[in-house]
Image (cartoon, rainbow, N blue to C red; front, side, top):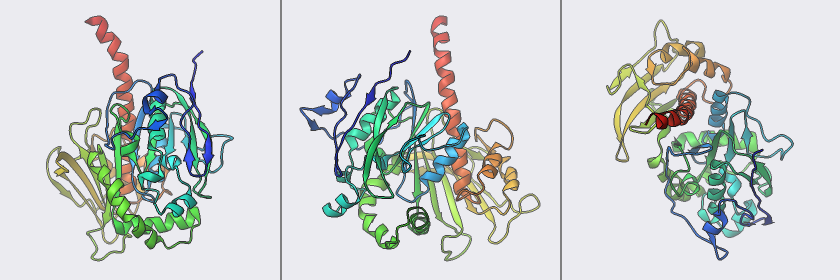
Length: 397
């Protein structure tokens, strides 16, 4: 019978979280010398080395579509993603057959009132417990269960912790990926959602009013967070393996963000991850697919593909501007894309139709989120295959 060690945390107050009380791996001694927290380097690090659980990092600002992306990703692996059974109904965690998704907001060390009293935003490092975050993510990666705190987005309070058992795929989504993965060999693939200010404003209004019932001035809230976003969140995108960049359309002058131009930026030379391409790999392509096989109302749809440089890295960029009228016709576009990691013809289209009611299903956000989900599944299967093959290669040697 396997033995699972659990990290336990005690909520001392609304504004602080104690250190873990038990560890098989000596993490408590490593990171809490003489009862004093040691801050680790705040540099994102993506590695393909992994022993027990594959860890995927998804970084973005609040209200940028992380939750929708997570639902698409877990669907690719099978099973419905649901909160922990019998747990806190306001839990941010989603669990499916193979995946567990946690929200890094759960590592806020200050509740909503505490942040107001100290005059800081949730983006500020002073409002988060990065050491506990890192320690627990690393523990889950190594096959150790943890008791993770819960930040309640409804009440703004820090709730009692919940048990997180190591899954096959562990997704950490939130603001501070750079602090969550301060050392190497923790996160296998890093993804960043980069939403332009105009689009972010529209999305955040929809999310906060519909789901969280807050009536505060959304624009004022975004402006108040902007200095911290620029300082702590936005710089993370330069280290990501894949970036989904969401911009206003170029097809309509002065559009109010209803039509989107979405770019999938994929870093070259990343292990287990071959960039998607349109028609001919490495070429520069511009394609308007509207016609007999794809219904397009005004302003139409335009795709583009080609090599670029992104923060000094060689990348391939696939772009879609516009939106689909009929999702069942997406298969025409899918048939012209390569390296999309599908198991059968039309799988991208099938996934998009399955979640047609999700935000972004008629544009590039849903399309590229679905493709990234399929590529993460392929990445996981490559890792499993390599582990099976390794002992066989060793015996041959």
